[in-house]
Amino acid sequence: MTKISAEGICKSFAGPRQRVEAVRSFSLDVREGEFVCLVGPSGCGKSTFLRIVAGLMEATSGRLEIHRDAEDGRPLNSMVFQEYAVFPWKTVSENVAFGLAMRNVPRKERDARTAEWIDRVGLRRFAHHYPHQLSGGMRQRVGIARALANDPEILLMDEPLGALDAQTRTVLQEELLRIWQSRRKTVMYVTHSIEEAVLLGDRVVLMTAHPGTNKAEFTVPLERPRTLQTTTDPQFSRLSYQIWEELRDEVQRSMEENA
Ligand SMILES: Nc1ncnc2c1ncn2[C@@H]1O[C@H](COP(=O)(O)OP(=O)(O)OP(=O)(O)O)[C@@H](O)[C@H]1O
Ligand SMILES: [Mg+2]
Image (cartoon, rainbow, N blue to C red; front, side):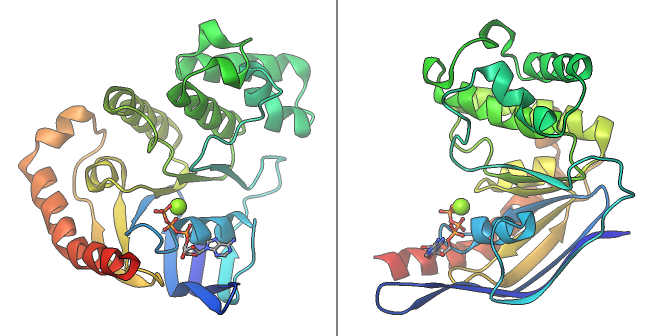
């Protein structure tokens, strides 16, 4: 079943002199329970597209349909933002509980789910700390825990591990794989890392340089469950390289444009 269907999405912004075309006729269908990774050069419109899917902004034109499950009080989507989007005046625990509190989830269940997700992202000792008392990587983990605790139908993640050091990133990639394997949520995941996209995704969708449109897409044939060991599979490196070959021109084009 198709969960998200976006067709011919265009988005332009009013600039100081002229309009900036951020996304040009981009189409993407995501099946229920599918993990789709979106990759493209910086400034190609990935975050813009994700925000449109999240309902945080409107497309200039195009059609977006999201298939809702039966109303059971769960939120439709939760977003993990590219920058650390946590409330600085709330503790880790209050941040993670935020979506649940907004939905009036009973106190006991809220506390249990909050504690569970804080544990999962390895922040138990910091549950009562404020964001400014945490490292950048820890703050990003708070954002991830908050989105997951919410148990949304769709998870939209904008470079959730992008700001992390390589080791923390690897640990969280494995954690994300584990979580996804147990829940099979519909995920749209933006990353700059081809390897991360191949490790996590069922499908990798490439966008062209600015203005972003469809460039190519690849189905990832690697078996699940996957772990970090999957990266040693020859299929893994072959596919990663194949994707890079398609992406290289776009990255070059985007760098020349910005030079
Ligand atoms: N609110 C806005 N107002 C005006 N222009 C915007 C706005 N948001 C994005 N843009 C422009 O739209 C284009 C796409 O931006 P977007 O943030 O979606 O790119 P991106 O692919 O997420 O890049 P990155 O990989 O660097 O995060 C850029 O040229 C950007 O300057
Ligand atoms: Mg972005």
